[in-house]
Length: 176
Image 1: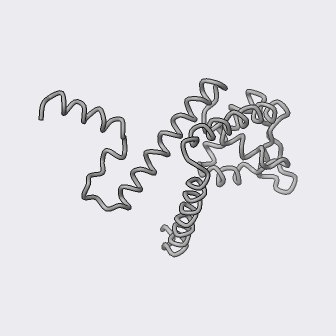
Image 2: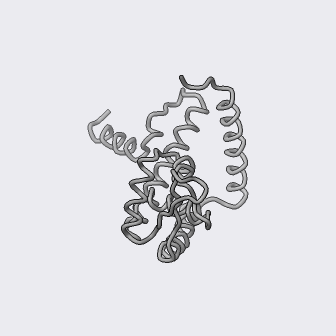
Image 3: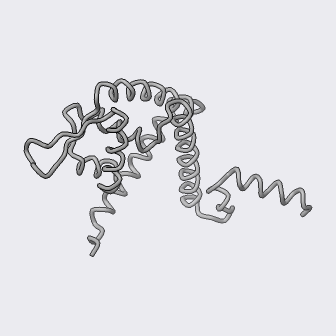
């Protein structure tokens, strides 16, 4: 193999990311896993880039605001932590930042003196609505190469995979 050929393959491997790890003898499910991982990584990177470029906001802040947008009455910070699958410390840090920017407000929970509820402020709700509108357009653009039937098939198939994973999770022994 010539030096130019090996450089081209290296560059192609870099372009493929996770998929470059797969070889022709690998099991089809391993190849599928690597392709899913590569697609997810690429889509997430592009969404992160666009959020930063257009709204100067990170994906974690966007996700945080999306959860609050769904809960008009506010949500306990501990519940928000579970929904976002991050530590309570991460939620506290995001809350501090977003509160400083006037996008969220913290209130004592009326039913639990030890807990805080977080709400979007009117400014936060308006900001999130603008971001969500653009986010939806970006997702439609990024998936635009797939026809409706393919999208439905992928959604159904990945739904079955999620159900299987949840069933495996139920039967797993609890962590010590």
